[in-house]
Every structure is written in structure tokens, then in C-alpha cells.
Image (tube, rainbow, N blue to C red; front, top):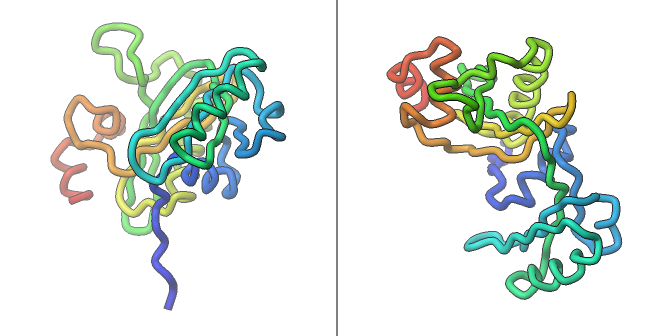
Length: 193
């Protein structure tokens, strides 16, 4: 009898799970001795299993220790993660039985009114994003659907967040990704609910 796998609930556990499975995530550290390897700019985050998170953007190395001190006031643990600057996209992922299906990458922030697909993206980059979204979904053991947020820095995509229960609203990023892949709103809701 196999143990049921639980999807990580806090932000650090998500990134740690992704990193352990080989999914490209921004560099991060959990001890002060390793934060220099993370680089600047970065975000220092209090590791709370539940409740509000303390986040501090660090743009100078001299600001790291005060940011860590601030984070550890609310939680005894912290992590510092590199803030990746680049093009932000989102890729929905659904399950078809045991098969993981990445959907179409979409703009997280459309550049023009009514723009939704990442039309300017080369097909090789779209393929890399879909592969990474599928890997993130699998690494977290998500059972139905997810919405993977990525930042493309230069020619490298990084997973910067995963919503394991994205809303199924027509204008939401997950639904935009699904609809561009050719699914109707009803088909997606039926397959998930």
C-alpha cells in the first residue's frame, strides 16, 4: 500500500520539491552562509506554514542581514530567492487520466488589449515552457489541474510559482491557457469537477 502524496502547501516547500525533481527554479538559500550565492536582486521570505508571509526585496548586499532579521521576527526560518527579471508567462496543465497535458503558454500581463497568447514567442521557447510546466505539475503530485507561472530570462525559463487549484473563471490565466489550447470552458470544468 503506497502512502498518499501531499501537495506542498508553503512556498518554500514548493520550491524545494521542484528543485529536488530537477525543475528550473530561481536559486534560493535557507541559511545566511549561502545567501551570497543567490545573487541580487532577491526576495527574503519568512517561512510560515500558514498565515501572512513577510517579504522584503533586497537590491544591495548590505541589505541582506537586516532583511533576514526582519523575516525571522515573524518566523524562525526564512529563505532568500533570486528575483528573476524577464518575460512573465503562465502555462496551464491538466490531467487526462494519468497523462499530464501542458496547455498553451499565455501572457501573465498582456502587452495589448485582448492579447492573451504569447504570439511573439518562438515555438522552441513555447515547447520549453510547456515541458517545464509539465515537470512542475508532476513534481508536486498535482492530481487535477495547475497553473504554472514562469519568467523567461534571456533564453532560460524559470518556474516562479505554481497554483495547484487555479480558479476556473473565464478571464483567469488558467482558463485562457485552456481555451487557447482548444478546450471550451464546459469541457475544462467537466474534466476537473
